[in-house]
Every structure is written in structure tokens, then in C-alpha cells.
Length: 304
Ligand code: CO
Ligand code: CO
Image 1 (cartoon, rainbow, N blue to C red):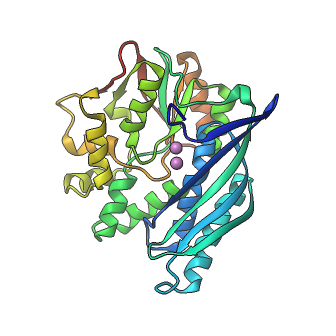
Image 2: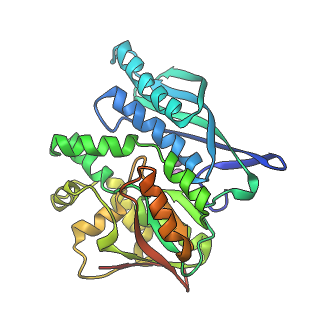
């Protein structure tokens, strides 16, 4: 808990530990089935970020039963179940309460070999930083709520958010990583700063190498940015040196609060090619090397 890791790990035997997490979110898209898929993928992601394998999941739902028809709940849970099954886990129960604000997520229990837990700290100077999903989901969903995002872009963002980090996690464990976390509410740079602090290192990113959904930049230019992304920028503050040649709208994508984002992985330089090749072979096609770990006090450098 001291480093704010993605999930709790509890050792029950020599080679067996539980990985436990609970996460739920309010709707970020209109379609309940998509909302269910995204919220479930987001909840499962914290187990994947530790290198764990989800085994059981429970639904947690706050449902406004006076304002929404029962089929919304049915579609929501169908979307969630689809992702639970895709993860290989089993749905074993859950709890629903009447709530004025719709909420959905999962409590997930996974298993892991306690000797192979991938924490959000442990990055070493020289490591390469790999990101497995594109950024921009906070900006796109915010623009969508104001009916200003192109439908095709929203559709792509939904698929990115609904995608499990399963393959990314399995490949990461296979190849071996020094540290990992999933990019969610604190955005790429917020989560990176937490990793840098906990690891006692700096991280230098190359802006041009960081993947994002292309239409997100135009929306960022129009200032369609969630409040959480500005708070992330404040949180990181002086600890990030952003090269003045990087446009403000682009920089905000790197601070953008994500839902169900990709894994941010620190890996030894001699392993990075193998990691990328296996990620791509496993269908994680947008995985990219976006930076490197540097010596010195915890800070972030954003190079063009
Ligand atoms: Co997380
Ligand atoms: Co979480």
C-alpha cells in the first residue's frame, strides 16, 4: 500500500499469492453493454498490472432503478460477463443497490507466484519504458458527452478501453519486467511520476513516440479536456519538464486521465525488442517504446 500499487497481494503458500482489487466507475459512454465491457476491463486491469491471473470476479452495481429500465442492467452485466469470461475468470456473485448515480465495476481475485509480482516500483536507470495502449480516452469521452467527438473516433476509443490487458500482462511476465502499472486516472505522466518516486529514478519520454488516438489532438486543441487531466498536470507540477516546443494541446494528452488504459512497463534494454515483438505477435499492435529511465532525483522529462 505504501507505493499505491495497483492491487493487494497476499501470500497464502510458498508459490501462491492472491492478487485482490476492487474498482468501479460511473458511465463514460451511453451504451450500457459498452459501459459494462469497459468497466470490467478496467477492474481486471489492476490484476494484470501486477502480473497476476484473474480467477474470480464479483459484480458491484449502483443502479438507479427509478430512472432506468431493467434491460439497461441486463445489457451492462452481459458486457461485464463477456470480459470476465475472456479473462478466464469465473463470475461468482455480486451485489446491487439502488443508487441515484449509476455505478459498475468488479472485485477481482487473481493468483500469482509471490516471487514474480510486478510492482509499480523497481524501475532501473537504463530501462526502456513501454506503453501498450494509445492515450486520449479521457479527452474523447469528454468530447463525446458534449456531442463534439466524431462517432468513428468514439467507437475506436470504446474498443481500446474494452480491450483486456491480458496479453500485455502475460507477455510482460514471460519476458520479465522491472516494474509496471496500468495507466488510468492519473494519466501517463501522473502514473509515471508515482513509478519514478517509488523507484528513486527519473524518466525521460519522447513525445513523438507516445501513441494516442489521432483525433484526440483536435479535441484537445478545442479544450475538450476532462477536469481530472488538469488536476494531473497540477499533481505532477514542477516535477515534469516539458520541452517548450511541445504544443500545449499535445502535452495535455500525456496528462489525460484514462479509463482502462494500457500497461506502462519498465524493462531492461536488452529485453525491450523481445517484449515488443511478442506483444505485437499477441495482438498488442499499438505497443511502443516511449522513453527511458534515467539516474537522479525523481522527475519526468518530456523531450520532443
Ligand atoms: Co491501476
Ligand atoms: Co484501479
